[in-house]
Image 1: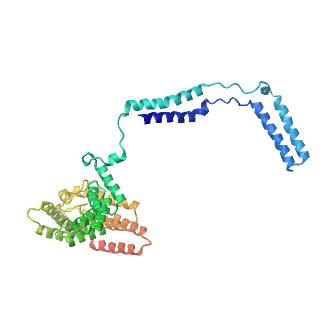
Image 2 (image 1 turned 180 degrees about the vertical axis):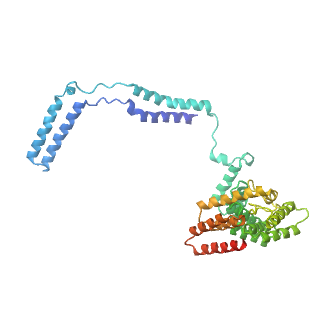
Image 3 (image 1 turned 90 degrees about the horizontal axis):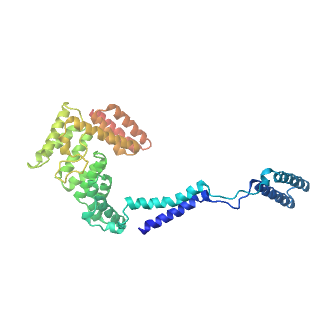
Length: 391
């Protein structure tokens, strides 16, 4: 409470300083005529000074002083000079308003705080907030604590492993990918960390299986050959490349090896049926689902569709979801035109969707952004030949 009283006094002092010109009276102020005479006297002094320094000749000095003297006599004889000096100062209405304002503003501020504020609530120092028990902390509090520790100890691999799945849960996919990568480097390579990095990278790219994600998924299968999520993601990448027949063969192979009790079998069966229909021309050819795989691992993160959900959708719902996903990727490339993997994925998506005009525009835009990069242009040209051969 004393702190707020101090703030009120400081406010009053500041207001008084700011409003002081409004109530100030200058007792020493000169009348207009007296002020003019003072200027003329200064001019006479300057003329004498210039003559002593040799800046003007004696004749010129005499002429100048004569003119100034004439003006002084004229001003001294003016009517307003005869009335005397400036009127005595008095407090005007404006001055009283300024004084009242300086007093009322801090009083009103303190009064408002006493009515709507909480003057009796104790403060919460930063250290006390950091030491709040976990059960009374929000997710943001917990993330802040871990981030503070990692900022001080960036080599704490266990800290990165702890925060990585939390980042996934709050849809901070780029941070999650970085955390999984740091944990993998500091604690030794583990399938869970590589898989987490791959999934976070895919989700951060709106469900597109980028080349970085593909390498990570392949590494997961090297470490755990039966990891169905990684196999599904690589098949999904084939769909995104337009290789529907290859993806269909992969899905059928997964289904043949699936345990009878696998919860993801119905979703995979629906996926296979959907690809059969698309290859037969019975439905529009949407791009593959945005993210996820048959869920033998933990449930997908909030806001990210999984394969079971997507496979169960009606074809028109899938198409709407895919259009939105492709649109988001296109918008992102407008602000980050140097993302070559993004351009390659957008070109593949347009090819799969049969959007020829958008495909040509994307090819032209990609080439413009990498006009000075021969390697990137080579990849773009190779992809253009691939998608045209597949059409």
